[in-house]
Every structure is written in structure tokens, then in C-alpha cells.
Image (cartoon, rainbow, N blue to C red):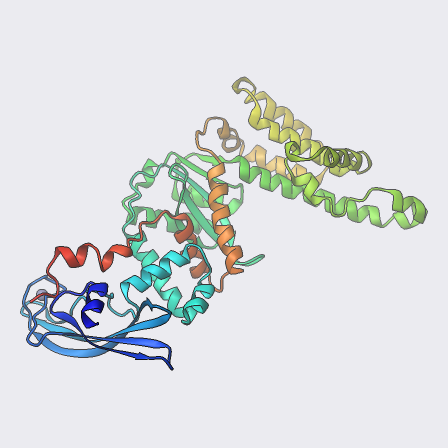
Length: 432
Ligand SMILES: [Zn+2]
């Protein structure tokens, strides 16, 4: 039985299983490991072989379940005395220092964490979620530390909130490799400064960037200009449409509100109930018209006829969308015609949007020359959004950031090789 466990655990001398205890009442299985008397170990700092044991300390680790029972490993962990480095705790083949879990248990946790909320993992495994969070943070941060950003050229920034209506974080993405590079609390210009430091720390070169893709918020624009001077800014379609949709919705709300008041005096109750209402029509206006059904399109036309301001905003928005289908010859003239129309519309949110577009004209027009697909920022955003929805938000921004890196960072976690794989079979760590 002991030998079977040794095989299953991949233990090599001097480590061996000395006994096992199963307690059906406590629903757990305990395995006691020990090393052979007089064993010598490798120094974890300099790699010198054959260091004598200085002292030991008893520790416990949770391992993968054995059948339906949680399995716990117990061992006295030796500290060795190295001639060069003094007294050091050795590297264990089955667990990393300071973790109460085995490598394989942690690998299992990380596999689950990409798919399900940490709270659900904690409940499933019967552990407190702060312990699970610690494992997730450790592996994501270790994997991030190994990342190489030296080939990054096209960067896009998007924002996300911890929960609905709560504090923001900025997500900085590599648009060519479609992955999250860096996430940081706040939606401010400082996000670009922190990103620059992180980029340099991962062998990236700020001067090599050829594009920054983002929304028109003043904080981002000034942050990008300050920290990445000379790198052209592109305002991508996804963000511009988001802003324009927001403006249209403001027009719709105010028109709906203004209709409700005078109605009492002007129209009879009968007449009023017949008037089509803008209430609950938000979805119709914001959706791509190509995706509307015939019935929905008829409804939009009917509402536009009655609600002049919303109807006009809608047509201005459709015309703006057309910007992206223009041939290169129209690339200058068409946006100017659109601007002239929008700025004279007397629809305040639309006029404000048009004014910002005019101010940042070059960046808006760069969508014609930029080769990078704006669908990538949207795709990364939706990965993070889906994780957030599964978890029903996060308690801290740090937790949001670590999960964003896990689901969208394309990290090489390499948790599976750390015990049964290379380290133990290739080097003689822990042998006599
Ligand atoms: Zn040493």
C-alpha cells in the first residue's frame, strides 16, 4: 500500500511513505512522508549537493482527493546547512514553500479558476476562499513575471468596473496577439504611466509602439500624450459608437420626460394613450439596424415620426456608422459633411459628441489607416465581463485584475509540470 502511494505521488528516495491513516468518520485520508535517516539534500540557493540536515519542522498539505476523500500529506520539512548559504529550507518535490497545498492540488485549482468563480471552487473543495485566492494570485503573478512584451506594437485600452456601477480598472491589451497585457485600478491618465513601467519591466520598448487605441475620455487622452508622446492615438469604432449611443440615449430620455409633462394639458387621456411611447425602446435605437427584424424596423420608423429629436439623433448615428464603410476617397469629405450636420442639430448631447470628435479629428480619421481590428478590444472586454458575471462582481479590484489576467492574458501557467514533470526527474534534488 505504501509503495502504491509512493508510485502515485511520484516520490523518489530519500522520500518515502511511512504510513497511511484513514478515518471514515472524519472523511479524510492522511499520508505520512519521511526521508531516510542520514539523508543529505541540495541547497536551494546555490545548488550544492549533499548538505546535512540542520533541523526539521512538521507541515501538512492538502493533496488531490483519493476516491471521495480529501487526502492530506504530512512530513517533517528539513532545513539544510550549506557551507556557503547557511541554514536554508529545501525545495520539496510535492509543494512550493509556504503553501498548504500540493502542486497538483494547486494545478487543479488553477484549471477550475479559468472556468468558475473562486467562491464556487472554495465551496466545492471545502476550503476558505481567501486560501484559494492566494493560490490564484501566486500563479498568475508568477506567470506574468515571465512574460515577454518586447514584440508589442499595437496597444488598446478599455475600461471595466469591479461590479455594476462600481470603481473602474483599465485594461491594456496587445491588439495583434489579442491578449490582456496589464490591468490597473482606476480610469485615469496615470494608468498609462503604470503600464509604461510594466511594459519596460517585461522587456517592452515604449518607443516601439505604433498605435494606441482608446476612447475619447480626456483622462486617457492626456495620460497617453504624457507617457507615450509621439505614439499616434486611434479612437476606434467600438468606443466611438459606445459614446454616440450614450448621447442618443440621453436625447431619448429627455424627450420621453418632456413628452410626459405637457401631455396632461394638451391631450386628452385617450389621445395620449394612443401616442407611441419611447419608454422601453432603448434596445431598438442602440441595436445595429441590420440586425433588427422587419417588425422592429417598422417600430423605429413609427417612433421616429412622432419623436423628432430621438429620430434625428438616430439618423445622425446611422450616418456616423456609415463613416466606416466609406471608400478612401471619401475619407476626408464624408466626415466633414457628417460633422456639419451633427453640430447644427441643436441636440445637446449629439452636439457635444460632434465637438469632441472635431477636437480629436486626426485620431478619429486614423480608423481608415489603422490595420488593427477593433473587434479585439471588444472580445477581450467580453471575456472579462463573462468572468465578472459568473462571480457576480469582485470584492476587491486586485481580485478583478488577477481574474482578468487569467482569462484574457494568455499566460503560460505551467503549474502541471512542477511535480511529476521536469524538475523532479531531471535533477537530483532531494537525492542522497
Ligand atoms: Zn548553498
